[in-house]
Length: 313
Ligand code: TXA
Ligand code: MG
Image (tube, rainbow, N blue to C red):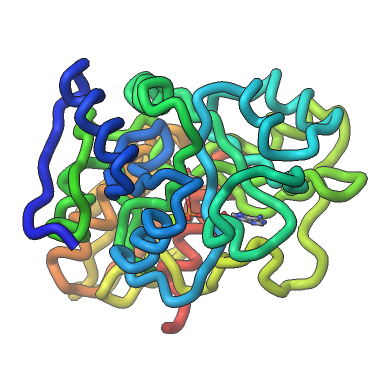
C-alpha cells in the first residue's frame, strides 16, 4: 500500500511514468471508454494480488486482460472463427472475449482464477491504447472501485474509493461509454452473452448473423457476477413512476427529478451518466428511486447494473 496516490496527466511524461509503475509491479488506475480500470502487469503474481488487496475483492474472481491490439490476443488464447469475426468488427472497443488459454500463456494464475479460459479486451480510449503500447505487455484490470461499490467513470470517483491504496491515477477525464464492457464467452459452439455491457447485444447478433446464447441456468457463469454489485450505500428502488417525498429521484426522459440520466431519453447518454449520477446521489444518503429505463440496446446493461444496485445485500 502506498501512502499517497499520484495523479498523472495523459501526456507523454504521464504515460511514461504510468508504464514505468506497471513495470515495477505497482497498481495504476487508467481510463478506458467503459470505466476506469485498476491495472497491474498481468504476468506478475504479486502485482495482480495487489489488485485484490486494494479493492478488498473477497474472492479471486478472474480479471480481464487488456491488450494494445487484437494480434496480441493470439499469444495468450486459442483463437477461433467467432473471435476473428468479433475482433474485426468490434475491437478496439467495449467488448471482452472469453477464450481457452494457450499452453505457456505466461499470465498470472490469479488473473484467471485458475480457470482454463481468460477474458481479453482491446480498449479504444486513446490514452488506454497509448498506455498499453508504452507498457508493451498485458494489463489485468478490473474496474477501479472498492469491491461491490459503484464503478468509477472519472478520476475523482477512483480517488474517492482507492486513494492511498494505489500508486497512481492516469486522469483523462470522464469515460465516454460509462458501462463496463460486454463479455462474450467463445468456448462453446454458440457465442454466449456472459455480461451485458457497453456494446449492445443486438449489434453483436447482427455481426454474427444469429442470436447469442444465454448462460445455462441462473448460476454464476461469469464468475464474479455477484447479484449485489455496484451498490450505493442507500436503498435503491427501480421502475418508480411516483417517487416518495423522502426519495432522491433518478429520472430518464422528460420529467421532474433530482438528476436525469437523459432528459431526451437517449440511452447512450444515460449509460454515460449512470455511475456518475449514482455516485452523486449516494453522497446524499437518502433512498434512491429510479424511473423506468427501456430494456433494449444499452438499456439492457443499464437495467442489469440497476438491478444489482437494488439487490438485497
Ligand atoms: O469494461 C470493463 O470490462 C472494465 C474495464 C476496466 O476494462 N473491467 C471490468 O472488470 O469490468 P471487472 O473485474 O469489474 O469484471 C470482470 C468480469 C468478472 O467479474 C468475471 O465475471 C468476468 O469478467 N470474467 C473474467 N474472466 C472470465 C472468464 N475466464 N470466464 C468468465 N468470465 C470471466
Ligand atoms: Mg467491477
